[in-house]
Structure formats: structure tokens, C-alpha cells
Image 1 (cartoon, each protein chain N blue to C red):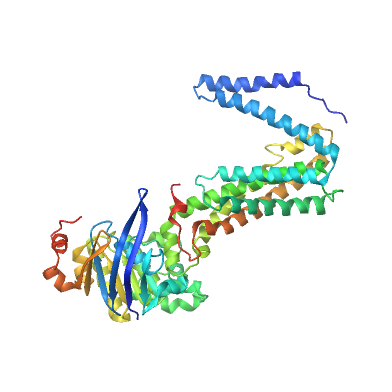
Image 2: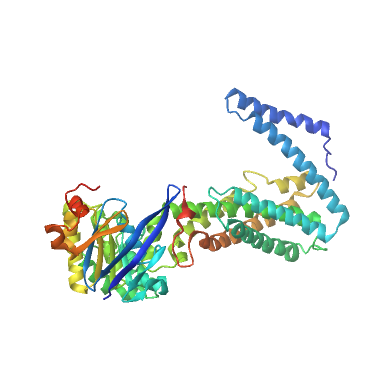
Length: 263
Length: 245
């Protein structure tokens, strides 16, 4: 099957969508016109650049280029997850970094090595988009879990201290908050499992269908993607909440006042 | 039961970006089975003293001794079971009364089902004999919640009880009954109690001895009767006259 190749001239027409969004912003005095313009230009530059990089990777097929690309994507995901925290704490980069790395690496390894059995394993055509999708979702889950945990510990400080005063370890004292943080991180991927195929056709599946894949094949891929995302988010957020205990408590199970701050 | 001592304890904390001594060279000894009422104006450092005694915070310098042993050398989990704390607000867990009461022993691996008799005993002790242990903590009045919070702390069989303004959120009648309860606890279990209160009347009702702290410093420490008959310092007289807020 052939697909319609998109020219830059045709893409230019799509800019009208951005202009219409700017018109809405102007009409309601939202002040978002500049952000929309900058966002549109940034998206164009970033995506064009990544398009060329990927093309280069696809042609070269060297494992170290692919791994290098994955490292850059991982660093960007960690940086973004840290930037989404309402309070920045010492050790946050390490906590989020280890969690996102382990959660994403484990899931990606299973998908590439066991489910798809990609050969060679570093084939950028599979590894880059799948790892990218996993990293993006792990990043969101990790950021959500950590923000929620900190906010809950701050709000429920009396309860946490009551538990500590009864002889609970720091982890035992925040267990109810850990559970709530995990739930809030995992619910979006569970919701997406519920509505996928009904409310929306996800990007990867839509892309495959447009590129000529049979819908049933595209569905199989998409199922694998939503399952792997659910697992990656669960593993990453679980690691975040466990490692994060040391961000909020001293080794002697005392709450660090400076770690809580405002919500 | 245990004796607790503060030896030249200083606690420094950042307040509005400035490092300040919230406790300044505090030394005081509380003998076994004694109730020490701690009074002083707001921000004097009363609550900080209690928080240092069960290591919810650590002292900047000086030592706190439990029966002669520096508490910084005791595992904080073991220490907190020996030195229980009751807070200004009951801070019960959003669970049943039974689950709140068995929380402490449960952390040590005691099976909650084996604690039914003890739960009943503690509810009787805090004068809630008719309260069903299956009730949710959130359904109770604040006075009942504070009694359950005291019972929850007693379930750990502490040797020292730290009480941080336990009556300030209660109406006068309930506060009085909680004060009677504190005296009962000491009589029955011989527990050493450090009782922080804003209320001079409450301090007088429960205390054996009285400690006055102002701006983190010990101003005087004496027998409770002696303090209320005539403080030995100018600041003590001002505090008693209600001139220090």
C-alpha cells in the first residue's frame, strides 16, 4: 500500500490551524498568541531536526549511535520530570533518573528482546519509537507520583508525625501517601486502556495505518504499546515513591522540614 | 519508668531566613513518675523540647538522656515506643478506633486480633467504655478523638509520655476530664509526663513541677505550688500576671 507523501507546501496549509487557535486567543484576550507562535516554530524545528537525526540513524545502523540517542532522550525525560516538580530538592534528579531509567529499560528490553525479537536489537526503526513512547509515559508517571507524594506528606504531616511517634519507620509512616501517589500515577494509563479504540485511535496506530499497515496488525502493535506503557508507568512510579522516602526523611526517620514547603 | 534529662540543649532553626535559637542551653531533669508542666509564651520553645525528647527533631547541641543514656545513641524507632507523644490535634488515622489502637503494637508484629482485651482496657482507661472499637475515628467528637489518641499512645506501654497542648483544642469540660485522665495515667502506670500547655490553670491542675521557658531559655523550674504561690523571677511574676504573651 502507498501513502500520500506530505509536501512542505501542503504542511504550510496546516499552519492555518495554529492561526485559528491564535485568533481564539486574541478574541478572548488569553494572551497566548506569542506562546502559540513560539510553540509552533519550536515544534517545527525540533521535529525537523529529529527527523534528520532519525534518518541518519536508520541509514547508519550503528548500535552506539542508537544508544547515544536513547541516552539523550533519557536525559531529556529526567530533566523534564525534575522541572515538573513544584519544589526542587537535593537528590531529586538521582531519584527520578534511576526510576525512569530502570522502569523504561526493563520494559523496553522485554518488548524488543522477548515480544518482538527484533534483530539486531538496536534496530532504530523499532527501538527509537518504542523506547520514546515508554520514556515519555514513564516521565509523566514519575513526575506525577513524586509531586503527589510530596504534596500529600505536606498536607498530612500531623498524621505522618503521629505514626513516627508511635514507632513507625519513615516508609511505614507514609505508606497511605505512597499508595495514593501510585494510584494517581497509574490511573491515566489505566484510563487509556479503558477508552483506547473507542474514544481515540492512538498516534502510533494511526501512523501505521496511514503508512499502509493492515489495521489488524496495527491493532496488535497498539495493544502491545498500551500494555507496555501501563507496566512502565507502574514500575517507574513504584521506584520513585520508594526511593523518594530519603528525600523527605533523614536516616533517623525524622521529617526534613525543608523538603515539604508549600504545596 | 524512666527519668528524662535535658543537658545544655540548644536547638537552632531557620526562621524567616535567619538562624535563631528556639532552645538556648536548656537543662532540666524530670524524675521518674513526675508530671512536669511546661509553660511559657507562644514560640518559647515548649513544643520543640518535646519533639527533641522523642527525636522527631534532633538537638543542635547538648544531650537528652533517658535513664542516663544519651537518646541519640538509641535507635529512634525503639526510643519512640518508650517515649510516647500526644499532639495538640488528635491526628488519628482515617481508620477504625480498633485499627488506630493496634497500629503501634502492629508495627512490632503483634497480631491485632490478640489485642482485643488490651483495646478494651485502654478504652476503659480513657473513659470511653461504651465506644465500639469498630467505629471510624472520623465519626468521633474531638474530645473522644483526643482520648483515643491518648489510648493509642498508651498501647505502646511508654515509660515517658510527652503531651503537646493536648487540651487546647477542647471545650473546658472535656479539657478538664482529659486533665483528670492524665493524673489517672500517672497514678496507674507511674509514667513520667512532660505536659506542655498555654493554660496556667491546666498546668496547675496536673503538674507536680513547673518549668517556665521564655525565648528558648529556662527562666525557672520549681515545685508547682511554689511557683503559683510566688515565682522567684521577675519574668515568672510577669508570666503569672498574664503580661507575657
